[in-house]
Image (tube, rainbow, N blue to C red; front, side, top):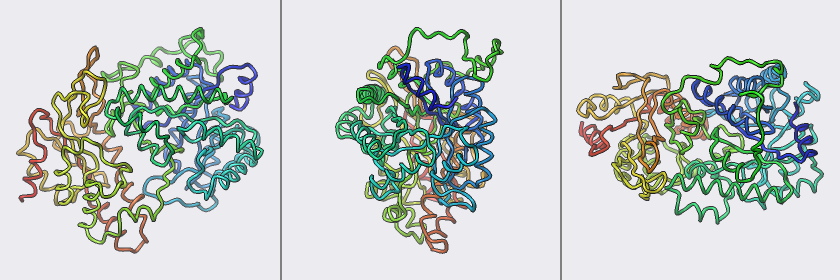
Length: 582
């Protein structure tokens, strides 16, 4: 069914209209567990769900699979995202035909960003803008699809002004779009004023606000790097940013206030960017009294629109084997580090989100990182970042976390010598959960963490590391280069999972929100090297010394992670002292 028809019907019946967005997890187990989560959350009665489409069509097959499963097995109306950046016209047509064949009638049409490591380009016979995709869908498929487009209350980063962006936006509607979902925002008045401006220039289609609950401070900072955040939100978060549970509770409270303000402003729809998590969204909907406690399904699972005669489903559909960390429905609700469990449906890359367009311009990047011509110049970029002299690296667009203060001098030393760190944490043995540097979780707890470090380094440095590491039995390492060549001292190879952060809290099970996982390390490898090329090397002309230097590093260096299992009195950095004496 078309979502525009669902909206119109529910408006007439005065029913609440809310919907959820999901992204394709990066591992098979994560997808399997997303289906479990979709089944639970679809029981709440969302008007529809939508599923994102990776940059350059990188997740197109998986996006189509999830949409097909959600609609035809789980039984929830589904919208499929589609981006047209770097995609040939024939590929777009095939994807749309596959959606139609699966009975999917809703498309969110976007220009999108290129895959990591690639520049934006209009392929021959392809599309330059979302409006081209909207026109193409209408020309090829007539009225079969409900077409949604993205809206930007603060204006798209590529537009010269909000007024200019509004005219481009209106053109997308006139090309055939039926509805709009907005970019995330945290100032309701700004959104309401933008809607009024849209109405003022003749845009009459539904404009659905996109709400992203704050799950954790670090993720919020990354996602809102280019988004206006009211001062009162920043002030409220500052004293609690090290307390994950307090941040989550504040995020729920803030989202409830925003949603209520939107509803009071006669905006009758709410769209939640779930980040594939459920606990916060559930709490928000309950606080808004949107969920109907009397709703009961006639069967333990939803009937799909295309399978109305089905009244038996094999039990293994709903009862798959569960591992330890999967035995509760919200085990992954605490903000995971990059090394969250790859089995989680929330394991993925925030940059996949189409509403978090990377607006870093080439001149901004060059101003930060200069024009390196020797490896020491590259090392110095890292050193300046660690010292706080520049505010971003290609892998990080926010300053370093407070806990890095405990090892900052060590990190300066390592990066000066060619161990280019992109993730690290100091050890902690029973620190209070309220500790301003390493604390997390609810009050009254004790937190533990193993010293961990992740870095790029040369084959020569890796060879020394392999030789010296035999003297440090509590250290485990895993290294991989861009070609996928692996070195490690872990007997299980990539089939391992090591908890590196855990906490003990009153009346709780032990929580372990961050792990190092072999599969997820290999997933991350492609992205980590892609960032070198896409956000740094490609900022320079093709034959420039800087581009040649960076491409040489990409082609030869290894990505390495090291865990020190001795969280009581271990010294991970003694390894590097030994290496650098060779």
